[in-house]
Image (cartoon, rainbow, N blue to C red):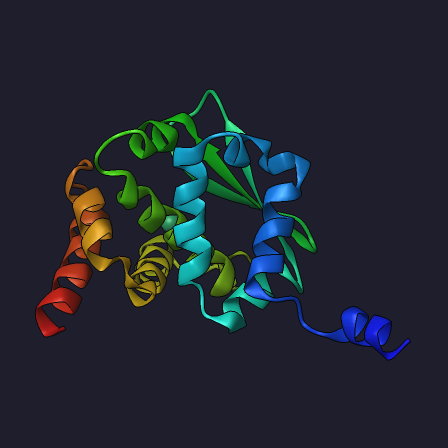
Length: 170
Ligand SMILES: [Zn+2]
């Protein structure tokens, strides 16, 4: 009896959370491809417990594959959050630069963690905060490599500057 009780009320372990994440029907595209699931293993392993619980236990965060668009964006609904993952990210996962994709996904989780849907900071501020989340998870160099390959808009140059400052101070 007490075993059942413990099982019901104990926080799930990281492995249990990961197993549940991969079992979701929405995530079949992740578990069906070893290269893609490796990237998500890295992402989930990098998350401190606090964020792991916030994103995957207290709330539901889904990664939905989109076949027709170019980049990664977010949609929100009350309890379930959806991160749209576009084809170009999958293409990136299949190159030697696969770990850059983890930085991009960590950045998207940063938008959720900083509640940008509710606070609505200006776009550059939101991007910088989301980047800082990815940096803190340990993906600064991958993020820098990714950003350096993008079109150099004003905002992008500011974002690159933030990562470079972090890396030169580290
Ligand atoms: Zn962003």
